[in-house]
Image (cartoon, rainbow, N blue to C red; front, side, top):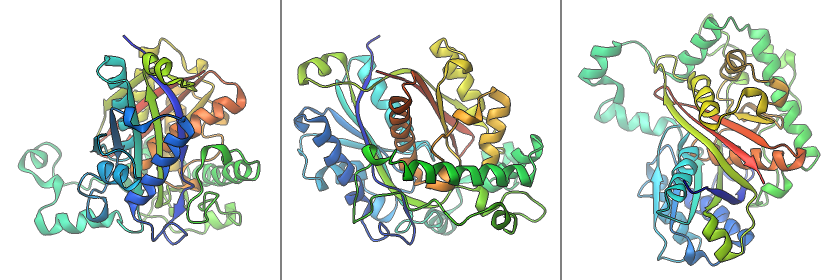
Length: 380
């Protein structure tokens, strides 16, 4: 099978819901990184075969195939098509995997994988408001017959994980604080500078809190009565976009491109939809098996910090080193712009491998419905 190479990767700084990106249309956010991606790759955009873009809440300004809207909003050739995909929080990682599969199958040579989410303009609650008018998605006869009328939410899932793996509030708070410390250290050291394309005067990620502490985290009320999950141990609602260029070996030669990474292995799995967020455990094992690697072969991990309990349970089950996991902070500090996070994590992963001269990086995303996308990238 042909190989898939990543030629370039870029993201916006991740903004907060009340920050500098709050008023920017999501198509313009995505257009910004698409233009920057093509400029950095130094190639004629007419050669791109397709644009695959992840976006979760495809309503309002994010509806009507935002992949196509964003590409055209960027002033790029109308001959290039676009498609928007949704696999919950893993949407843009799925876009990247679809792009890699298209190249590896030999059916396409140059594919853009991207993602965007504007959580100030299109809040998470918007889909639910529409659903309550027309019928909730988890209320079909077949669903109720199989799972009953129990509560199925990410918040309950995070709490169930904490209980199953015996994770204390103190452990979760300490992990969350470390995420902020790592993100702030990365920003201060300029580690994100080469991977970000400033927009609207925003040059750095807005999420990390320099004034947080264990005392402040401990003072937060749990999201569920008697639980250990708090807002401080949860991913931030954010705004952002990212894009990557995936190329075949032939396209690399034809366009004089310089690959920065190679797709080594991929997996996508289904898991318990009630626990919902445990998929990265099985997904990591599946990707390692496909790639012929062990956990010890991985130099850097990016595991989405939907909740602190997700990453801590994953580390316990896989034996991964937390010192090498989210080394520059994760979504608890930097934010989680749903549909964009997969590509943003891949961008962070590749740049960290280049900075540290690591060879293999693994990233995994927990997803609604009890799923997970996992990918192993090799630095070139």
